[in-house]
Length: 289
Length: 204
Image (cartoon, rainbow over all chains, first blue to last red):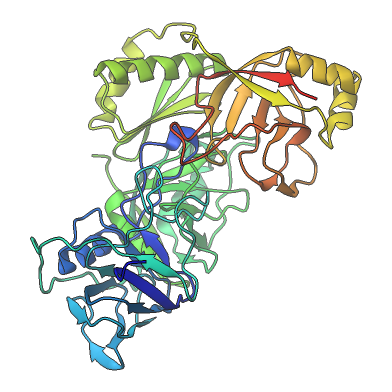
């Protein structure tokens, strides 16, 4: 193997390879996938001079430990966390030069949930249907990182658009999701529709890359029976029989049979990616544009 | 036909039957191919077609409700043949539900030309329609299996499907195929896509 590679010393709770996903294949049952906090992943790439489509690492809560085999520039964005290189503190949200063989530690998120680690040259695992993203629903793309794994790196671009620092939104202490009424809002009682946009829910610990699950008032259906399977979009708020809304995130199934009460505006979904379990969630109805 | 807006950039088009959904899907794919429809995803399902990634969903909704969809989808020329052994663990249950012998289940199934109505559940998993009444209504298993082997041929409701890889599932399994339904190193990765015609051919 070439020395353009990254050894995984500690994979962390769930660290996956992510890029901008594989849209365009939903009719074959292939989820879109891709980084949940797209703006954070894009910023990490810019900080190291990568192209926007380069693959990065997405950590979950407790970071990861990596050892590049050659000198690289890295940047960590998204959930703020402590970063060290061979034990010495390094900057979060800025380019960091890591010598060959040095130990890069991406610490536990201080707030938020998912940090993004861009490495100059990008993670160069073999793409599947045009994307290197790990898809946890269907199993496409590389498996989640494991201790001892080695990831190939691409060739760094000559620094074209490297930035040294950039503002990032703080992870939400309260998650406000703007929604438009869904195609099956009429499957719910008027009380349920009112409760949906007036009550406060909490982010459930059962949330994952497939969906942001919520706890809170159960939304009651106005009609019995089953909905035949229909196509689902990113940000769809599906309500399963237990009445607790689920916001579909990047690895969501392409079709589903539970009614969609509302759809979250796409620009609000990166915030959903950073909301830790227990975070209050409010759904606010806005005009369709 | 009813159009339902979905968020800011998508439209769900609802029709009266599975046949109409297939016809509408074929028509929308044709319009995209000729360049008159710009859309990222066209996702057919049981009674609907979802269009996602539209610049102006409201305008398309108005256009669609004012236009006519050809009643039958154009037939794909090619028929994909899937070799099958009718050796599934639920063959006897399906036979009992149909009120026929297991051999008759195999004969009916292998004598039917199917069409992939839509895909979902897993990459390469097609929902195939074509079984005639009264054989087009099979209940799911009361208790889903935690692991259905890849290549299992199952029935549920009006549909036949083949599991592209091992996964949990509640369909009634009547047979097994060695066909590779999904191989992402192959072009195309999916053996079956919406509109594909399919026959199951008995192998021994």
